[in-house]
Length: 548
Ligand code: HEM
Ligand SMILES: [Cu+2]
Image (cartoon, rainbow, N blue to C red; front, side):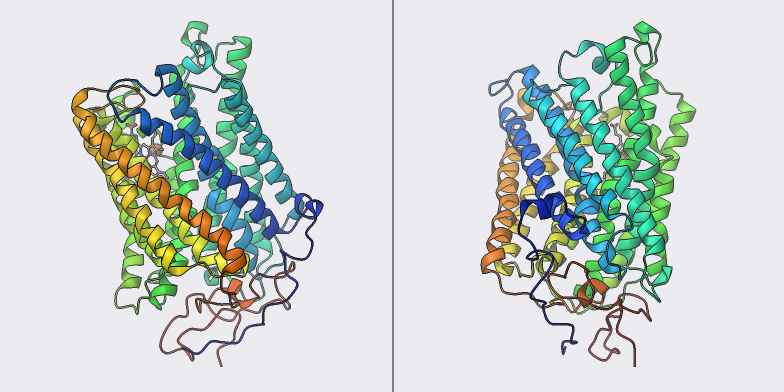
């Protein structure tokens, strides 16, 4: 494959244009804001990971020896709050979406650059509030804040934590708004809707959820806070409120929110698979529309979290059926990625390994989702480790793997350097093994009846718990490796070409790292993405390069 010539690395780029603190903290460059998010969420990932480590240590033995019940409750709550609100939800959209959306559509920036900076500040303010709550004694309600526990019985920092999630929510809403307007108004000439990369489609669908769903959780948490402070009866039956109402409102956002976490990851996989299989993506329009199907049906499935809440059996049956429907668009994507790989000429580089982990582990997460969506099965496994395993297969096996795939794939664009391939593959395998050893035993534990959210357990569950903690140690080691070699690569990594993977997206048609304004000239697009094929002049044809 001969390389197609793209502009040589500019000497001045978005990273070295100005080194002052001011230039970072007041930047309106979407790429710098993406880096601010990258640094912040990496920090929160390790904070959340620290709590997880303590949880797993406690669970090595059946008795409570490392921590007592109260501390344990706080640990799993703070683990969940940090991971969900301050890592998973912002991760791919705020870091990669921010960095890549304008580049992929040939724009200079997002539609509202200052709003983008404000979003980061709101995110940090929310995080600060949550961290202050943790420092002031922590919170123990579970990340789900169910009343009447959260509104009355708990004597931990519920309001401050809720305030953190509330404020961070606005960051999410504004980011979604910014993405939608950008995709509508800033596309390069010739970049029609069906020439958009699937990463962009996935972010569009995600933005709809961020925009329409987040206000509901913000109001719900605010109501719970008001009830706690002013003792007005909203959710607390003793005050004339309805606790199940809280669960409806909470899950009306939080089920769609699981798609905020997974859809952008699916967008990443759709970019990586064709590039490393050197094949045009199979079923482009099906993948694009399935993102919307997931976003829309995702809004109608929340009641599957209330199967044992006393909700009417007819409601449960309906929610169960709708939940099954979500499996269809998910399966369409999985099928299309696999079909793209079929007969491809595959290059087994690190991003592809992570993409393969995503497909395999997401399928396990999704299929066990069907188990818990089946009423009789859920009544048996509800609130057991089966559920814990299910959502970790989706959120870590799916989302985190996609995030790591993306970081490796676009690292040359972010930093202008290549990461060390051998070490990166070693880390990818370590993470895969560690992940499965941590979470697969939890399916069995849950099936056997071990409940979640307790600091002690019956002695017969010990062997599987020890396996799980052993896996978590391997996983933790695996997660530290990329941190180390990414930083190392900034200084010692090989310099990256503009397009090291010979990929087709517009983001590869500018220097690595890009200049502040992204493109020397606005690209003109004449054909769709993923033109990887032996028929093309160099086995691929970038968007923005005209077919001759
Ligand atoms: C094929 C798609 C999926 C189906 C059918 C499904 C179904 C379910 C059901 C029915 C539950 C409730 C279990 C219970 O507590 O009794 C559940 C729990 C959960 N699922 Fe999924 N799910 C799917 C995909 C996802 C995805 C993509 C994510 C995240 C990205 C996710 C995250 C969660 C979480 C966080 C919980 C736990 C809620 C809690 O009890 O605190 N699920 N899932
Ligand atoms: Cu759900």
